[in-house]
Amino acid sequence: MHFVPYLHEQFLSAWPVSVVVLLVALIGAGIMLAWVALVALVAVWAERKVSAHMQARLGPIYVGGFHGWLQTVADGLKLFLKEDIIPAMADKWLYIQAPVLVFGGAFLAYAAIPFGPKLVVSDLNIGVFYILAMSAIVAIGIIMAGWASHNKWSLYGGMLTAAQFLSYEIPSALHLMPVIMYAATLNLGEIVRSQETGLFGWGGIFGWYLFRNPFLFLSFIGYYISSLAETNRTPFDLPETESELVAGYHTEYTGIRFAFFFMAEYANMFVAAALSTLLFCGGWNGVLSRNIQFLPDPVVFLLKCSAFIFLTMWLRWTLPRFRIDQLMALCWKFLIPLGLLNIVGSALWMYIFGQV
Image (cartoon, rainbow, N blue to C red; front, side, top):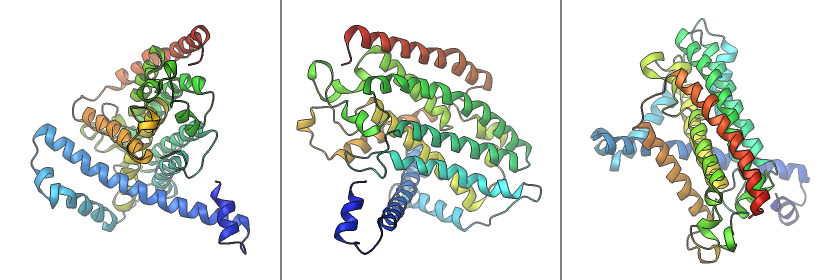
């Protein structure tokens, strides 16, 4: 972070650089923690509103203050104030650590997400790889929760998580490879900057990787479907299906520990939306030329992320849940072969037409 030496020179010259770096890291972590909590609150409220309008449900529209926003605040306070119960037969150590691991994996992913050209906690040169690694930590925490609860429904949910998450990490990474090949970097900021101009030197929407060639368009579709499975969203919410497993891996969790799982799901949903925006839809670059962009860069980025989050919510209240055999067949028989095909096709396209 370039502002660390400046901060040390201008204001904290008596302090060691290492202390200043630690102080900046703590400030960044505090800001990101507040952002994750805000994302969860707004996303819960938005999902209630979307479902209410799609299904003509009156409660979320009218109850709880202006457009029902107080209901979300009341639910959050209720979760934080409820009694924390640990089942007598549970593996106590793993039971306690699982929600921390799930939330921690989702929280750490935010460190590498750039909200603007210079608005990022840590500008990693392996940003894409780092975020994919953090998503694997979330999967491990969910499996731990299912095993440690000593509940058959939780165990089934954990087993489904192991099958689903670990399988869909493969197509998720494969469908990101063509973008990385075109940008020749894993740095998210550099990938966004490589989309400022596109075919024939045109900017705006023509620079987005989503529209560069048909293979990148198919990669976006494949990645978005895989991200739904990795974030445990309908129609891929088998690890916590209420009609079959009560609540799945978090059946035995109450209060603040359940809130961690709840917040992590919406935090992961934002991370998936952010990756889709940064890698395929130009990041903070608008639909017009970079020179005639009217909104600030972070606003453009957040509007695109909000559109993806709305689409994810829309699908939840539209599509039925997959069976486990259908879910695994979609991964191994369709998404993985499509990902390999897109890698080969993108390489041939770059060889024939040049990297544009």
